Amino acid sequence: MQNHPVFTDNDPQNELSTLNLGPTHPATHGVFQNVLQLDGERIVSGVSTIGYIHRAFEKIAEHRPFYQITPLTDRMNYCSSPINNMGWHMTVEKMLGIEMPKRVDYMRIIIMELARISDHIICNGVLGVDTGAISGFMYLMIYREHIYEIYEEICGSRLTTNIGRIGGFERNFNHIAWDKLRKFLKEFPAVLKEFETLFNRNRIFIDRTKDVAAVSAETALNYSWSGPLLRAAGVDYDVRAMEPYSSYEDFDFEVPVGTNGDVFNRFLVRNEEMWQSLRLIEQALAKIEKEPSDIFHADVPDFYLPPKEEVYNNMEALIYHFKIVMGEIPTPATEVYHAVEGANGELGFYLVNDGGRSPYRLHFRRPSFINYQMYAPMSRGMLLSDAIINMSSLNVIAGELDA
Image (cartoon, rainbow, N blue to C red):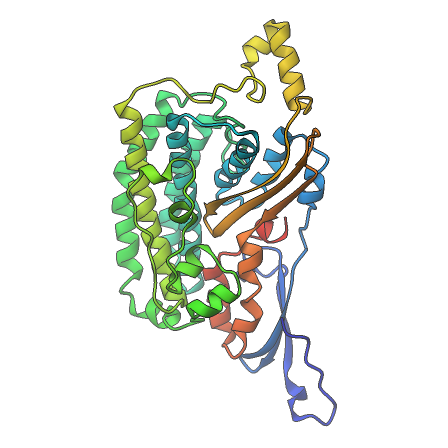
């Protein structure tokens, strides 16, 4: 990041304006700030300021049993919180050596890909709003609500879902959830196609986004970018394909790749990822329907919470519930790293465990935090209006930025 420029009274550049973009400006889409030096409408330099909603999640996690860390992960990327939840659960399962039933993996893929669609709906919809087109955003948001209704049937929550458990899900999906999922798969493709028709060949939108904030593959890699931003720059990297988890290796899907990493390419990559997510969900649903079963969790009684009705009526179940929640069951002293493909890139969990009831150390690799480091340098020389849509295309989620 650049330091604030210093100007003397005799310097002809002392007429530059200082602008605070954020932390409460609506265009930032979150609570973070950029202190910009402007020459008219053009950005000369800038300094990014973060930490406005830092909540010390990693330090809090060191004082919480493994089960009680799940709600913390909800509050990182809250636009696709189920991916955060399941990434954390898979990290603990990796530490414990738990092997998941295939049906549970497929159920997780359905939920995670719905979350990816939900996240991309917001990013690409808001990008349209920031270029002056609100209709597409309002149209797509209806289907984000439909996704939330599916979550609600499965876990009772919508935004911060706290969905699933270490070892699987807390309950099987009911028939209403399956029906709503099938309805979504039937209706959403036509809506997504119409959204693409509205923007992909729209001259105003193309003029506002094409060749804006273009980033080379080398620069993107140097800044450790991942996710749609890296793929838009032409790098074919996706954690689901390169380091498969949750049985992604059983599925047929493509990794969309752009060319020059500009705002328009980021938009196109996210749109195509929604099509690929639909493809993955359809495959997962077909696999589940092909082999009907009621399995929704692994057989790990030492770490999977017993059903509530048993806890209320059976002393042994009550004891196990207490021991699991309070972290009284021994865990191996080891360290693991597990990453999932979050909506914004590689979402990683580095867990160091000493065998106690809480992690000795837990680090969240938040893609928004890493992707955002390049914002101020890449905005240098841009018009302010272009810097706004550049920020929108980065999809920086403040909760994931700060943690």
